[in-house]
Image (tube, rainbow over all chains, first blue to last red; front, side, top):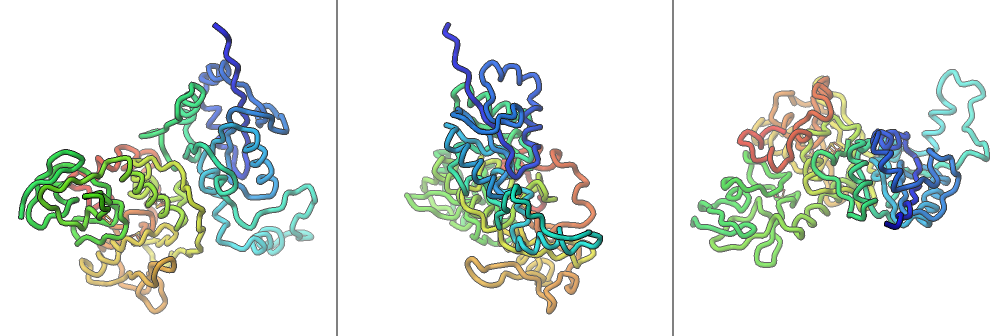
Length: 181
Length: 238
Ligand code: SF4
Ligand code: SF4
Ligand code: FES
C-alpha cells in the first residue's frame, strides 16, 4: 500500500482564551492516531510563525484587533478547509461582550480612570495591534467552511469532528456532542 | 368538522377546531414551537412551527387542520427554514450561551441543537440592552428576549397584572416593564407569578438559583427538546 501523504493542519487562537486548544489536547491518546494522519504547520504547538499551504485550518477565537484580521486572512488564503472552532470564533463569545460599549470609553475606564494607577495612560506601544471597535465572529471577515460550537467544544466533539474530516467524511457533530456552553 | 390529515405521510386525526400543531401533539407527533403554549391562544410570532401545505407555508400552531391535507413538517426544506429563523433570533439579540444562566434549560438553544444550527450565519446586531436587576428576586436580562410575549400574556391574562408589554415595531421592537420608572421593582410583580416562570429563554431569571443545577446536567443536556416537549407536564415549565 502506498503511504498516504499526511494532511497539514494549522491552528491559531485569535481573540480566544486557548481553551479550545486545551480541549483539543483533551483528545488524549487519540492524538497518536491523529498524528499518523496529520502534521502541524503554524500552531502554538509548533511555534511556526506563518502559515504555509495547508489542508485544514482550525481557528479559535474571534477577531478583536488588526493583527487578528491579518492572521485570519493568512489562514483563509492557505487552508483548503477552514474551521471556526468554539464559541468565540463562531459568535465573538466573551470578548464580544464589549461590543455595545464605546471602545474609547472602555480603554479609558481600564487604563486611565481606575483609582491607584501611576502615570495612567492607554498603552500605545507600536508593537501592540490596534483594537477594532467591535469583536467579530470570523465568518464576518472570511468565508468559513465548517463550524464546531462549544465553549470549548469537548475533546470528544473535536475528535469526532476531526476524524470525520481526516477520513474524508462531512464532519457532523450532533446530539449530546453539540453544545453552545 | 373532525377528520384526518397526513403529517409527513402519516395519518393524524383531528377534532373540530384543532390546529395542525394541537392535533399532531395529541397524536404524539412533535412540531417545533417557541411562542406557542398550551394555556394560551396561538400567538404566531416565532414561526418555528412552520409547515408546508399544498405548496404554501403556514403556522402549524395557528392553522386549523383540514380533512385530507398533506402537511410537510420534518423535511429538509422545513427544517432549513426553521434553522434560518433561529439564526435570525440569535443574531438579533445577544446570545452568549456560555455566560447565560438558562443554558441547558433554554428552548431556543435546545431547538438550535435539535435543528443542528452550527453557525449564526448572519452578521450580529450586537444591540445595547441594559439589564434590570432592581427587583429583589428576579433579574431581567433583555439581551436574550425573542418577543414571544409569553410573559406579557401570562401577566395580563393569568396574573391579572400586566407587568410587561412590547413597544415599537419592526427592528425597534422591545420589551418594557409597565412602571413609570420602567423598573421591575416598581411593579407588583412576584416571583411566583406565572409570568415569572414562563420565559422560554434566559430573560426572566430567578436570583440566587442560577447555577443550582450544573451546566451539563440540565433539561436539554439530558434529553432533546423533541422528547421533552412531548412530556405531559412539559409545556408549562422549561
Ligand atoms: S437565552 Fe438561550 S440561546 Fe440565548 S444565551 Fe441563553 S441559553 Fe443561549
Ligand atoms: S421576556 Fe421571555 S417570555 Fe417575555 S417576550 Fe421576551 S422571550 Fe418571551
Ligand atoms: S409556535 Fe407557531 S408561530 Fe411560534
